[in-house]
Amino acid sequence: MSLIEVKNLEKIYQNEGVSTPALRDVTFNIEKGEFVSIMGPSGSGKSTLLHILGFLDEHTRGEYRFKGKTIKDYSGEELAHLRNKEMGFIFQMFNLLPRISVLENVKLPLIYSGVKEALWNDISLKAIEAVGLSHRINHESSQLSGGEKQRVVIARALINNPQVIFADEPTGNLDSESGKTIMEILQKLNEETGHTIVLITHETYTAEHAQRIIRFIDGKIESDRRVEHRLKAQDHFRK
Image (tube, rainbow, N blue to C red; front, side, top):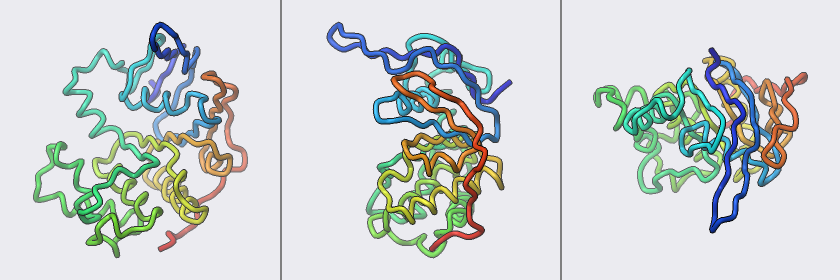
């Protein structure tokens, strides 16, 4: 059983009687521990797909299974737990609280995790250390650079040790050097700790950090290929 199974998936938006297809007959599987880039131009359906994979939206037709179960197999409470515990999300716009510290931002998912509060600090500090930001734990997120903010988002996504990390254009608001650092971190998470990574991007350079690239155009899969010359992460984090 694959971690993610998608079969003949379709998503159609309805607006005032007008049907707009966003995904058309999409089929693929992602195995546990894979790093897959979903690539395509703006409007190709890749972000719509990510929202469906993260149980943030429902598909119109076809089938999507995560760990063998569909969205209909879960109650609302179970879905919320699944998104918090089994899935980590990294978005382009950061979504950090600006007036609290890096440590407090990273802790937030633990509020609903069932983990004892006495353990929150240690768990959060390990996640922050994993992204090379231990020297910034007491800074407010408003005091950080864009690259540092995105590292905080990654630490927060890691906090519950999810099965899969969904990253939607994580380098989109960053300069090239910060973007490279973020990709190095994601690749290390995949190679060293076995996290499954699903990356949404329109950039070839970013996509080629993955093991596999699924390219979308007009809501359909145009190609699905292994990356022959995968870009390798560096042996250190840039501070």
